[in-house]
Length: 445
Image 1 (cartoon, helix red, strand yellow):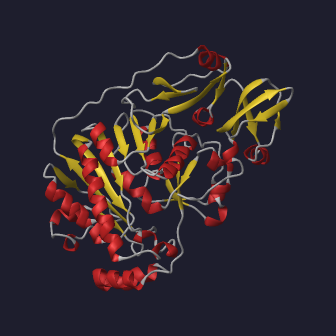
Image 2 (cartoon, one colour):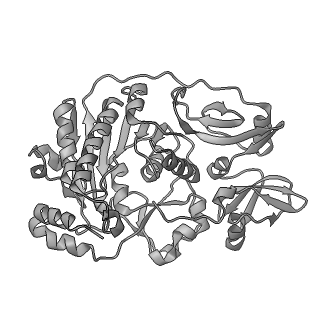
């Protein structure tokens, strides 16, 4: 139930625009997905999804809801990420280039992080942070599913990260926790706890998060602040307050003809606020969003002590050689029996809550190496590959065994997309798809 107070507030703000805005809440929701450019989709028949491009997002598409792509094995293979179309705008505006160091400060469930990773193309460093531990686990899982090798997944308070990474990042994404008014049309129940007091509380917290983010941006770097709410207090108001207290930052215009301009009159009247953008459901095919691009004046950049790599154990080297696997450049580190290949630009991680330190390779167990699911999802090929039909893929994702003709670790694929590992012996392919993921598909963002 959308509260009357929200309608009254929007009517006062929008004036003559309000009837069209109100009418848009009766329009059907348009779901979207982003294709993963790090996966090869040339052999995949995507026609059943009836994809049409999202105008403001590279690799972004609307799809036919009846096609249920979240239930396809392609989803578990990381071919695409289910994401509301307007939510694709902020990362697109961040201007990420290959090789950069990028922080996604409030990253769960992972939509913007996986989009940033696509722009990095496996190079540079992505730090994806989520303060809430359970949501951080979901974030880590989505980084894994999309085959991302150059990301560190952390669960830290923004202020603590600011102490560790002064002026370290080239780009920072701040998709701040908000009152969620932009999602009321999609999920009316989201409005049940809405109040003006919550809006003001969110604005205060957003200001603190944005300040912490600013301490981590290098001179000449850019950061994007975004919300999925219509509230001026949380949008133009937060940016206006930030600019007043951070004179070395300025707003950058967003070349986005599909979006409405920010409203200076809804804050302190600073005309530069018109350089921000608003996504309204009555003006485009998507939900409510706000985006601002902030650039720091040229100045010094900070440095952080680098991560020190370890020597690879014999069991890992033997496994890689026996399965014709070449790893990307990186620094090998271990947590107990688990080995990770961290990105080359990784900072030292001592004292941080780390959920994923780059590409999870696997474990050394009793003088043998057992590969991790993440390694399979990153790989495009290996010495032994088992190509599955769609019927066989369904069985594999449910944890069932399959037939095999060779012996040893086998990369399981559908239409050239890796789904996981199997281990073949005596004509049987033992299923190594993680038990916690079996028969689980999701269409959540």
